[in-house]
Image 1: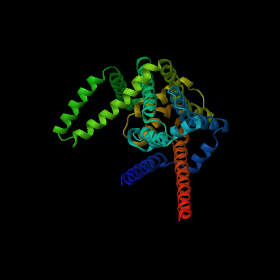
Image 2 (image 1 turned 90 degrees about the vertical axis):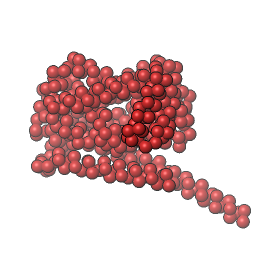
Image 3 (image 1 turned 135 degrees about the horizontal axis):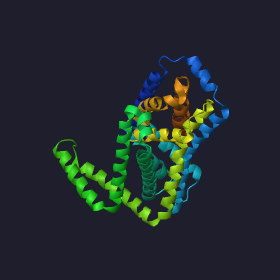
Image 4 (image 1 turned 30 degrees about the horizontal axis):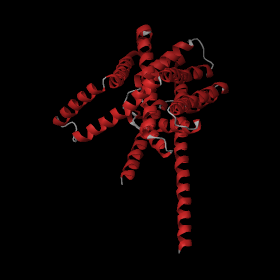
Length: 358
């Protein structure tokens, strides 16, 4: 019954995701000459199309390599291909759920199926997530301190969302660090907030939320131990995360060069794409759809001009996001298909042994 309820939940989320996607592209393509759009996209230099594809796959696969690196560090022997699969599964479920909330739980689900201990899996995934938030918060803060005027110029009204995204990321990193350094204080404050929330009828069950909080703190305690025991590996993880995230920023520059455009420095395009990531990262919309495309249109209009702006959005989001979702979905379907075949074989063996006994 619980399994069916989860399936229905994910079906609803996929349908919601598809509805937003159709609405987003409906707005983007409204009033566009589709034959001209197709001609512009197909006219992109093949070597740069290949570069965007490579960066798209690298972005997801690099996370898988980091997961593999950390799991092996704690004595769990896994194959890198297996971990890249976890990464694609995480990318898919993060993409279709609000605030990317479904990614890590599903990664843990597939890890558990492969007999990876829950404590190790939780610690590794939280370490990867923490490293990502630290990198994004540092990039966002550095840009705000040393590149504020260009940011305000290019982002315009979206600068407000940049500040919201940056503040939320900094608050989250601060919370994670507090959980590491002052877990007792965090538990005390969380208990008080849950108690107040129940009295104000914001939540129904205090016990349920306390259980969730304990689960989070216990999982993060494993991560704290991991950080303390593998400091040099965590430093390496943060460096790897920086290059992994930079690969996503680089896609837009490859699209820019693929259309034969020049005149805007590479660093500027990378920083503008990074600014979009900072702004949309914490939004409660599946895949940050709609707002990402809207910001892209505003920020990169002076860079691409009207002629190439919509084709650039289609290529960047199409290859960097939607295609990777399809790959992630294909991996998930393959896993479940293999499992159904194994279950069928197991069932046949059991029936055969029963017949022999009879």
